[in-house]
Image (cartoon, rainbow, N blue to C red):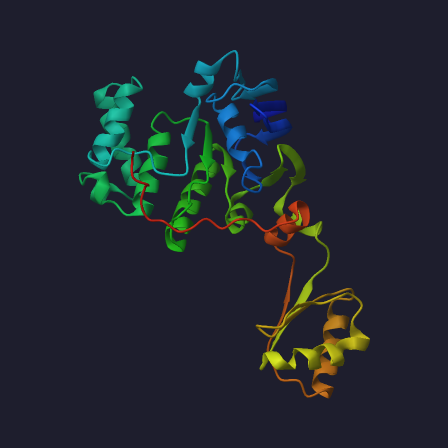
Length: 325
């Protein structure tokens, strides 16, 4: 498979902070790479290097076959970049935003208007094309921002936390648009703090921490690093958690995770259905009242905690771009 993005040993230092300590990654053409990591891990700096916004101190990187240091203009001609907040002019209409950008990128006014019409229709914005962008909802502004990244049909797209602050319905709509782009051959590098987003979109995931790659694989492969399935149960009264632990004593082969306040107990399974059966029998014999009894596979959240030692930060929900100034 052709490699659309390649980075080898990328390093970057800001005064006394070593932001990147030798980042290596490859993204196959027409695929999605999810770049995950805690705040300050180096995700955004990696994107800035690959999009020529920041020059690395060492290493080598190519995007769409062009060197990010020696051929930055060619790199910029072949990429689109959507940041955390929609970069649209809120005074101009959606149509005017896209036409202006197309004109600045030398499409010519006629071609720019035609391309704007195509993108507004594709992204479900045709009905509001002639409304000021400042009247758009958060999800509509994000779609307009993504459309603006595609005005010249770039083969590589960088999405740096593109759905931060969106409601779940708007996020899922944007996910569908991204998958459609990838199905049409676009390569996407995605940074996100929504792990379910990476799980849904990414073909491969790279986890970075403290400026280094600490894991690389498919979402399922990273989940398998955590271990076996979990049995989670909730008792009718939190005070009965002690009774659960006493009843399960002989059946437990691993140390359970307990949330006494919420009356929840989680047990990692060694023998799958055999362990489930043993636990069910023990609880029935002890007459413990259970309101929820669920077996679940490890999640990407579990893998993230396993790899980094801490949970992913959850961005606060916002519906508009921060004020200027």
